[in-house]
Image (cartoon, rainbow, N blue to C red; front, side, top):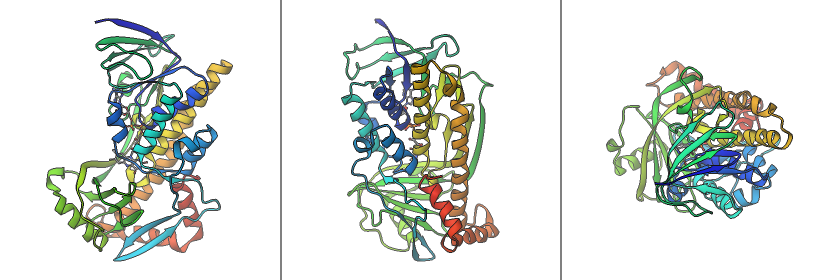
Length: 402
Ligand SMILES: Cc1cc2nc3c(=O)[nH]c(=O)nc-3n(C[C@H](O)[C@H](O)[C@H](O)COP(=O)(O)OP(=O)(O)OC[C@H]3O[C@@H](n4cnc5c(N)ncnc54)[C@H](O)[C@@H]3O)c2cc1C
């Protein structure tokens, strides 16, 4: 087994939306960076998750000159549909500026980010195993990993241990990655809130009846979102201790129809089922020495708010600008402020995510927080239609103008 030693400015651990956006911003700015990803390219490009890019994120890509290559052709729909008491209640975003948000399946965003990074000559290494971080508080951190298959853009050797010395490590490896785990105990404070229920998330190979539809029902929330012309994503609120084995395809389709109060377009094959407990988590601070945490490695928002991917993109924007200031002007101010800058935005979105998650779930199922809370939630829901002020504030948060 051979050992190769290398040098760069930034090592990015993880090629999700945070890592890939950061890599693209740095590459365009001429800052040396290497992205290390544990999984294969095929796996990463097919992983299905989020689907909404908010206005702030879309404008950020524009500012970096990447809007057309990353988001070109993605549709925007200024309406969201609710299904409540057997009726469809369209909700039209009410803001002075309708924004630039888009429907963009996360795997399409990831694919576009990878294509752009690789075709511009970026160094992205898939199947990088056993990544470990050393010397995070020393003058230059060291990132060590096993190169299983070689690299994209350079020739690699199977079974090589590589070390990369760098100035900055960007921990973009999600909630279960190695970056946050490399921070000594006691440095981070974890703030968390459990909502008390989970979502069964289902990907079906059938066209969606609606671009987006959310059902408020006494049996629990149900959501339906188009994921391209031939696929749709369904969400069903369920108890925390449910297992995917309890949810046969037939039971899923029955439950979707019951909660929406209408038949689905077609009962097609279901390609994935996953249970996601709804929780909000924030780690503070989002840095340790030369390591900076981004995206899910630093915070989790409940998927109801569609903000997880957008927060990850915001962190990438803030860190890229901070690294640039350091590299070009030898000024560490923005790096020092990175955590505080991101956390202000994170808590703002967490507040919206918690409010919206409670509103929609409490309006339907009373088993979690009772009938009094249901009446409160219904009153707040109606206010979105009755009050211009409430509607404008809601729209600004949802579309990412706030
Ligand atoms: C089922 C589901 C549905 C969701 N729905 C929505 C939604 O509708 N709207 C929304 O905004 N958000 C949604 N989210 C959240 C959103 O997908 C995440 O917030 C977003 O992916 C965070 O991006 P990230 O780059 O921080 O992390 P990730 O996208 O998780 O990327 C982390 C990357 O790091 C890699 N990695 C992990 N460990 C290592 C390691 N040791 N070494 C190297 N690489 C490593 C992983 O393979 C992965 O590629 C959903 C999440 C899930 C799971």
